[in-house]
Length: 344
Image (cartoon, rainbow, N blue to C red; front, side, top):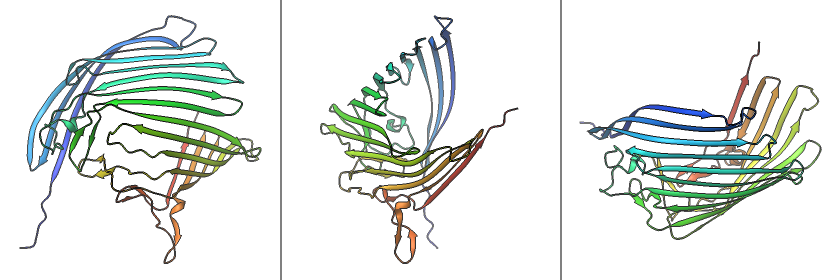
């Protein structure tokens, strides 16, 4: 008999119903940018799972959550404040919470502004780490809640068209994969420091160079690999190009990151996983673009991955970069789109 390969099927199928009730209050009737929001939410989930050739018992779970938000853009538009919070009081995610505080102060239109922020999240493991999932293929393990803290501060200097931002990430009980399906949790606390710089250089009357640079470094021994540097640069013409109603932006865009050991990809469960043997080292990616607007009509055209061009048996776009080990990115990609709104 001819060989018939066996089909292997895994799936998690969910049905979700959410009911949310919120109350808004505006303390100042003359400032609609200031409000308080309080609410509660009930989430109902029903899951069906299939693992290889066997159905797994269905699961019905629920969550109850309360949330609040305070937002205020002062009437002089110099202070912009946001405070948000969520707490899960019962159900599958009981004990989870999210907190976010953001403060921005406009010094002046000429000098610029500064911002400060804090975020903290305490979350239950994703259902992939639950033994009832159709994609749970590892040995039985217990996992703790993951906690992430993010502190940041930034300054924008209008005269220099320069934005500088510093980010500090603190992670405990980090959840990740160490193989195609092996699940792991990092027991030690580790942190990541990232510095961002964003500046616009005027090359001519309508020509600009917009540069973004990101520097990042991990401390500790956690199984996390990051490129030390990532940069995005756009050399572009921006203006009306001689026509009163034609606004256009066109030019070249380049993206580059330093070599690093990028995560591998597991097609079995659609997840990336840690590896420390293969290094990804790509040439800078180069794209060409043209975006324009004529009143309510907008369109764009992009030719991406021009860096893959080479003469090897003829001119071809086949010098592919790698997104992950053994996963090359496409060659030349053409994208275009239009958006047209009609106003009676």
